[in-house]
Image (cartoon, one colour):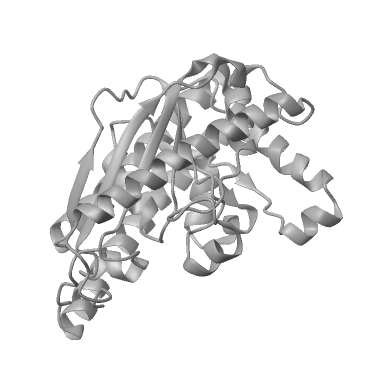
Length: 313
C-alpha cells in the first residue's frame, strides 16, 4: 500500500461528512417520494405493457438518484478514481456483473462508475433490508432481488435451504427478461476481512472463497439475453473505507479494473442443482476467475509505494 496520507482535521471531516450526508438524505427523500407515487401508478393498472413502461420510468428515477449522489461525492471529496476497462460496455444489453467485496464504499463506487454505461445496476439484498426506512421500499419498487440469507449452521442442518436461495435467484432474474439489466453479484457473499479470510480463504491472498451457484442460476434464468459477464476488481490502496470515510474526505484513492468476459454457453442450460459435473465445471471456472483477480489485486498493490504504516483516519 502507499504511504499513509495525512487525514483532514477531525472538524473538517465532521463538517464535510455531515454536509454530504445531508445532501444524500435530501436527494433520497425527494426522489423516493416521487418514486413511490409512480409505483402506485404502476400497481393501479394491471396491464403488462403499462407495467413495463412505468418500470422504465422508475429506472430513470433511480438513475437520477445515483447521478445526484455521485455528483455530490465528486464535488465534496478529493478521491482519485483510477478506472480502466469501461470501453465497449453497452446500456442496451444485459450483463452479469461480478466484483470482489471489500467495504461499505463498494456500492457507491460501482454505481458511480457504471452509471449510464451499463443498464441500471441491481444487486442482491438480504430480505431484512426491505425494512430499511425509505430505501427498502425503493429497492423493492426498482425490482432489486431480495433473498433470505442462511447461516452455514442452518444450511448444514437443512440443505434444502440452499436450493431455496438458488430458486429465489432464478425468480428474481426472470423479472429482467423483458428489458436490459445489469445484475451485480458479490460472489464472496460477504465483505472481505482478515478474520473471515483466516477462517476460509486460504486459496487466495486478497479474496474469500467464491460461491458459484448464484451466477449459474442467474445465467440460466436470464438466458441468451446476457451479452456477457463484467468482471470488476476493486482495490483501495490506502485500506478499505467505511461509509463515513467515503463521505468525509477519508477515501484518497480507488482503483477499479473492468473486463468483459464471455459466459460459457452451457451455463444457460445446465442444471446446477442436479448435474454434479456441470456444478463442478462452474465452480472451477469461477475459482480460476478469482485466481486471476487475486493476482491482479496483488499486482496493483505492489505497483504502489511501500506502506509507511496504516492509513490515517
